[in-house]
Image 1 (spheres, rainbow, N blue to C red):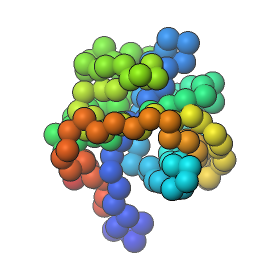
Image 2: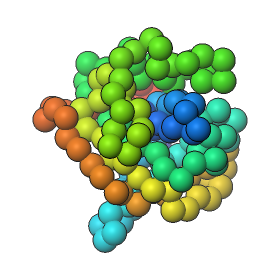
Image 3: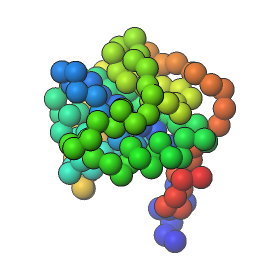
Image 4: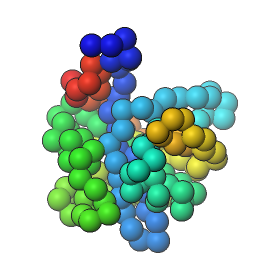
Length: 149
């Protein structure tokens, strides 16, 4: 185990809607980066299909998963949206901003994409929060020490 594995974070699915194409990817690297205005950053691997879609959209949602959503997190993190409509397997709703919110989400944050930069093998996207909603007041699914907890 390395020291980086000791950085624990909430597990989330970042979702997009690009010209009617819904997709999402499980991420563990999400953080708040500003209080005023409220902003978050998400990190997505350069080779991921969601990264391609993020480059073609102005908005995204960060869907924070509950402790019982481990199966959903694993599915959205291992199956590619290039070949599979991930939202056919699990129920979802659409947010006010027309972004998919998958089953297992306890809270979500809708963002306007306001910046991005390269960080090694990932792209970090900055989003200004335009809307946020708590669906269930319960602890999130945590990622740390290289596994979902």
